[in-house]
Each structure stands twice: as C-alpha cells, then as structure tokens.
Image 1 (cartoon, each protein chain N blue to C red):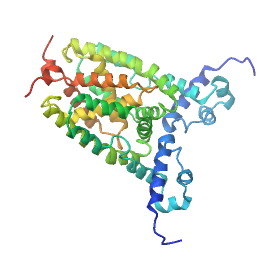
Image 2 (cartoon, rainbow over the protein chains, first blue to last red; image 1 turned 30 degrees about the horizontal axis):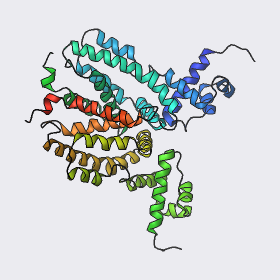
Image 3 (cartoon, helix red, strand yellow; image 1 turned 45 degrees about the horizontal axis):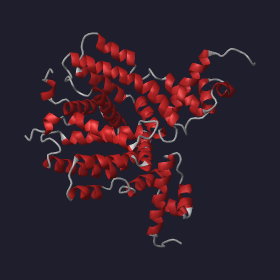
Image 4 (tube, each protein chain N blue to C red; image 1 turned 90 degrees about the vertical axis):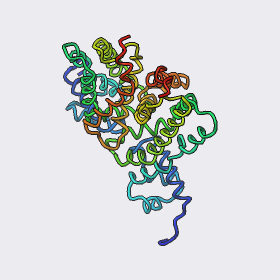
Length: 201
Length: 201
C-alpha cells in the first residue's frame, strides 16, 4: 500500500468529521478512532496524515473557516446597494443564532489555556479575515453616513466581537433573535451617540 | 453510621476540591470519585449530599463566588477616597490576569450549551452581584465627573463584561497587564468620548 496517492475525498471527510466531533464534544470528546469511523476510513489513514489529535483539530478548524459568516459573502452583501447599520446587525444576529457556531466558539474558549494551538488556528484562519472584512464594512458605513468619521474603527470592531461573543457564550439559554437585535442596537447606540453621528467631520 | 450529623468541614473540602477540578478539567475532567479522594473523604460522603456531578459543580461554583473580584471588597475600594476610572481599570486588569479565573470562565463558556444549569449557577451567584456592584461604581464615577451623565450605564456594564470576557478567552496567549490596560482604556475612550465627558448635563 505504500506510495499509493492520497485520496483528497478522504481528507475532506476526515476534516469534516473532526470539526463536527470537536463542536459536539471538545478536545476531550474527540478521538482519532471515532473520527476515522465517522469519516468511513481506516484509523491508519488518519494517523498517516496527522501526527496528533491536536494537529488534526487545528486543520479541521481551518477547513471550516467559511462555514460561519463567510467573509466574501458578507462583503458581497454590502458591495451592492444597501449599506446600513441594520444589515450589519442582521448578519451578526444570524451568526449568534447558529447553535453550531455557538458551540464551536464555546469549545475554543475553553481550550485557549489548555490547547493554545487550536485557538491560534482559529484566530489566524477565522478571526483575522473576518476582522479585515468588518473594517471594510465599517468604512463603507462611514461613507454612507451610518458611522461617524473619526471613530476608532478597530476598537469598535474589537468590542463588537466581544459583545457578540459574550451574548453567545455567557448565557444559560440561547437568546431569541429579537433580543440579540435589541442588545446589539443598544450597544451601537452607546458607542455611536447621535450627536457624533450627525457630525460629518 | 446513619443519622450522624454532617461535618461542615467535609462540605467545604468537597466543594473546594470540586471547583478546583472543574477549573482544571471542566465537566468531563471531573469525577465524584476523584473529588472525594482530593477532599480526603469517602466516596459515599459525596454521593449522600449531591445526587449528581452537575449538582455538585453548580454548588461548587456558588461556593467560590467570592474567590475572584469579591464584590464587597471592590465596593469598599471605591467607598473611601479615590473614585477614578483608572482604579476601575486596575481591578479589571487584575481579574483578567488571574489564570484560575480565566480557566473557570473558559470552562463555563463551553458548558453553556451542554450543561446550562452550571452557567445558570454562575450567572445568578457570580455575575449578577458583580453587575450590581459595577452599576454602583459607575454611579460613583458619574458623581465624580469620570463618566458622562445620561450615558446608558447598564449597556456600558454589559459591553465592558463582553470586552473583558473576550480579552480573557479568545486569545491563544495570555495578554500582559499593560496590554490589557491599554485595551480597556481604548474601549472606554471609544464609549466615553471626551466631548461627552466634559458635558455635565
């Protein structure tokens, strides 16, 4: 069997199975044996490609990078036509409401201290491109008079990420979309006081 | 042995052991057997008091409620003398820098979907009293001209909690105190624009 070319279909199946298992059970709830079973491949097929469960999970997180809030799609939504704060809020409400996304972020939050390489994979392949897109969207909103000029856009993005993460994670029950919408609007009202928004310089 | 009065010293030792185990290993990494061993009691002593691991952990979280950012102590720090934004930031920097606190919050973040009763115990016994104290501190800061009047204090507190949680959890490496201090000040600058702070009405 040595030297046989790798089947890329196997890789995809393995990475998808690993990501799903991580979302459901975290690092402790994932084993290479069960990933192989779920992906329908031999255990050795997984071990030959990934030296450890952690390396497999880091790549599975990268593999799933467009599964939630695909950056290119988000940008396209703003590129044509309606550039409003309301649209930004709707995209965030949808992300917060996705139970898989909520669990993924929760799992990652608990691995930051024990498995920093997973958080690093998530930060680099997931958070960074989304923050870049968020900055582009904020600049478009500024051009359309929906955000005040001169505001600290980077900190706005950071704190919005914080508020969204907090709403998703630190609640015993999942919040209803209307509640999340009102919450995010209240945060934006706090940051973007009407007096500052009406000032064009 | 039946009818023998409970030893309150045992309860304390059990709850402390359970909280420590949860911080280190989460729900999956905690077992009643190991909690008993760590607390130096018989397994049956634990089982007689707590019907499940989840009930034990919920109470252990309540038991540890004054271990991080003790609300009464925080309030006392502001009651006498110096009521400044800088002092508020220092208290938060200290909380963010506590590795045990970071791990506890991370563990809870990942249990919100799988064990909502633990997040509920944390929210009710830990978050709520701290938010009440935060509001009192914010009102004191307003009286001392460090926060603008008319600002949405509840949302300020909510988003500050979000920013603090985000800084603690969603990073592959622990941030240095100077970095956290600069970050929190930048957030407060975003929310409390100088123009609004100088307006006394």
